[in-house]
Length: 192
Length: 142
Image (cartoon, rainbow over all chains, first blue to last red; front, top):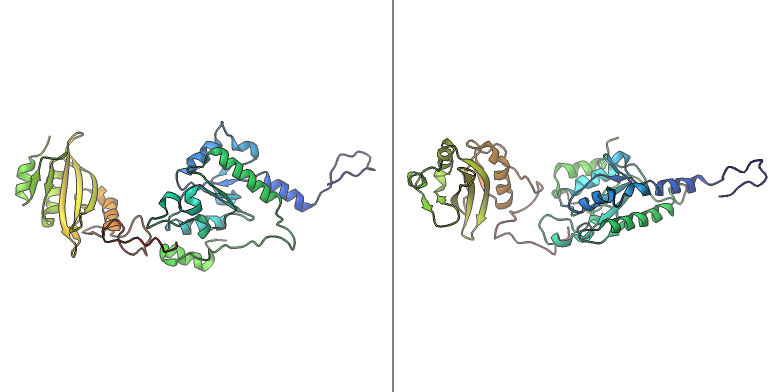
């Protein structure tokens, strides 16, 4: 950025579109309202007046279309895995994923179960992992600020941008989910 | 009003065990729905349907309430090679999802149930996870 010195009134800034976009995106990370388990209550606590996530530009939105961040607040069962993948694909790009709590990171206390996906990164590209059982709102705040650093330092323009597009998990066994998996395999769950 | 449990048990060829926490009626599975219908005619409501794998048999268990404080347990034992029993949906429509859960977890098939499919697990799941014979393959990545 810079100020043009010889302008009559130096009241404007010059910057690049890329820097402006990164600044804007990193300061308005909107969360998709997809609470899968008990960590989502901590996420709600973060929205309340004591922690007040609104002050860093983070809101919970009711629709994946209006969201930037998918927080996975708990275990993903094999039945829910294709549904989370579908919600993720419905979000506008660029988009990010936070794995919140032990269950979302590895399966946690429920890892030795017949129905668990052992880690959200098996079905979604996770950007930030936040440990805890449950994650305290402070920890989630810290994770969001870490994600903000990543967003602010990543370019989504030009030749060096990160690849975007339909996300199809590499290892989603079709027998987990019947018709939904077939649907995902066909078009990734997007419906445009 | 509590129904006369002893005569009910006798009428349906079962036994009454009054020693435990709840009075428990065990009946052969042919009379499962008839017992429930007789209780329902007395104004008894169900509160839960589940099952127990004892190792030799799978017992389908129904908890029914004669009043706020009086709970009655109904049981019927099914042998491993023929896990079918009459559905209680014609008696109490609300048991539909509970019987689907029992089917999901134990593999008990309910005759006369309108939609005998899995409810909690995904459709392609193999086996019935709450059976003693179900082995958890923790090495399998998933």
